[in-house]
Length: 348
Image (cartoon, rainbow, N blue to C red; front, side, top):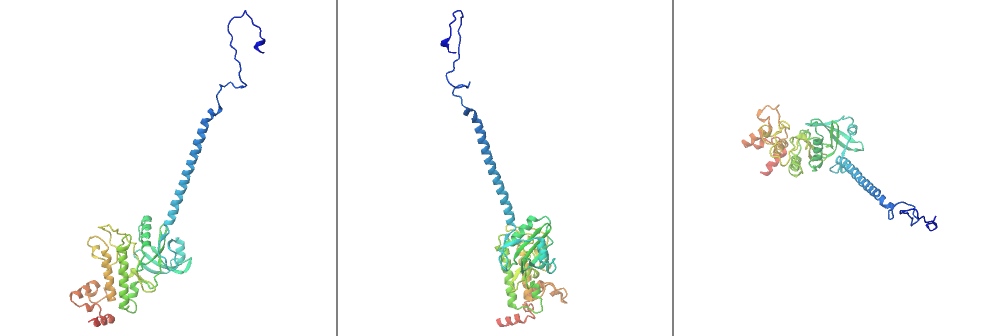
């Protein structure tokens, strides 16, 4: 009802307040209020959630990449760089124990034995024309995955025509094997003490090859290697009678900056340098001494120790040669070597 139609009652005193609607709004909220003001916290929460989700995705992506990279690098580490030749790939392969057992027909044909284990002839199952020599390591430390891998890496990096080439390896539990190129002419001992005396030219060529191989191990490798067991049996000959040093890198590596190394005697009787018995520093000089004994064996075509000889003075080759030097009778050293005697006569 409109107020204009009301009746004034003069008997009632006081004041009355009447609330009048001035717009069509039915809301009791003050003017200027908006729903947007209440939605701001919700927007902030949504922004935080979205940002956090994006950050979490980035972290997960990074962790996935890190895990993949480490796995890839670990797998790649099993494939060490090596020499390309004889039909092999340009990388050193990681073989399984069963694969090498099959390739050697159960390690059936032993072709050599040394201080660290036996060699067995075999073929690669992937290429039957690739003849290999598998060394089953026996006398190595049992706690040495890291040491074994370091030695394999060192051997694989050594690349010289007068060093036997390492093509692969196996490291499964307690089974540790090395896969080498096969040397068809056996050891220098087999060649030197065979049915016929090798020519002086061939002996000289072999001696120079061994010297070059030792020089590489001592001065040209990124990590200096002291062989510790240079002898005729550890010098192998390929199909062209090129001399190649074997068994290097299997002894404890003596680093370049190492000035004094005391260690247990390693090597073979008759080739051992005096340092091994006098508590002196062990260095590359022990290899030089052993190489000198090998040279005497090449020159004289006889073994360094022959205890079956009647003359005791000649039993130890190095002692006998030194006596010949003191007596000024070097011709005794080459006695019976007609080729060498003839060469000396022609030079006089």
